[in-house]
Image (tube, rainbow, N blue to C red):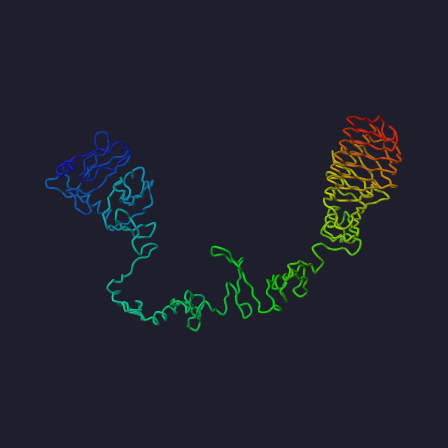
Length: 610
């Protein structure tokens, strides 16, 4: 190996691909070759060339020093200064080793002469294959030095000291952020400690640690304060007097079991009444694997065991056994006046409603008012801007929540235009509902249906009087379905592409005998009845204005329209009737021309016209 290395040192090798300008040769160095490319002396034990730069890997061999791999000047060696300079370069890199960084995986683009780095894992470029080595930029080329066990280096960009051990660079103990070790404590100084003591010092100055008694250690720890001079840190004593309890240190320096704490405040101040005070967004009482019970106990039935809900520390609601053993639900507007909504009897579980029950129970007939300048946040009980509802539907919803107790509810609708569909989807409880507009001039109170104008369903019953009605395209002015029943009079049916009156699913619509209504606009059908429904228009005066186009009466599928004894004023165009699929139209012998229209009626598929 020695002779091989000696022969390598005695030759010159040209750096392939070196195209950048080179400095003039130093004294004692060979001149450039005939192509102007610089000849570079060989370094032991080998040289690695990359295009545009020289990379040397310095490792130990028989002709190098054993620790830093510095090359020896061999006997009879030519160009001894080359070997000497190589050793000087290695010393310049490795002595007082301080690197710029150990985080780079590729060489910096413009390194300073003499700059040193610890190559990070998975390196690339000119650093490929040299992870963990020290890369030094010397004489315009990267030279790599393999570290040995115990080498240390200062990392400039971390302000930390690292050590090479077990094949890796790691932070030196006490290093980082500019810190470091002061004089370490010898293990012998910590040996032979007395029982129940802690090593430390009670006085300033240097010297070996002393054995501190428990009292001395506590006194030293008490010099460290937390949030105030009276809040001191102490040692954790033996467990409490009861197995499993924890102890705490009082301000008077005495210990007490945590199982018998006089006051506890969590982010709050506890007091004689509120011995446990918690101030937080939420409180969690969890289980330990099964269920969990929150228990509130009182001494006697006449006491109170309850949960009180407050606003700004003033009571607003309370639930619990308040004053007896029945379960009460109470509310208050001001913390002083309380109203009980629900009571559950302790003896039988029966629920009562001391404030009037779940529904308001009427003691007399009730009128709600609707005006275009009202508000659905009002009570609806006064015919004023501040008292009336704005929509008819709001009044219907409020009425359906009542227990009428045999009394009647009237919704009085003021003149104006209401763009809505009024739906009554359930029956009144123990009462009736009537929606009243302007019976003298119905078109003063216009309902423009978003779909239908008025709809009744699910066994509900509704009376509609004094409205002008215009249904949406393809929909119905009055619509009854699913056993709903609607009664009407003094209404004006305006133009629609749907039907004026539509009944389906065993529903019923009936005009008030002896009253009137008006047809002022055309429709696909005026009266339409299907699937077992029924329409009764009898002994009424029907005024037709403007000769509207419509099929006056249609029925099918076991449905029935009774239109006997009516007086028709005016005329219409379109067929008078169509009855099919076992439907029935009964005019009580009025004849084929009885109903308004310009065309004759039709009968088919078992239909019957009487």
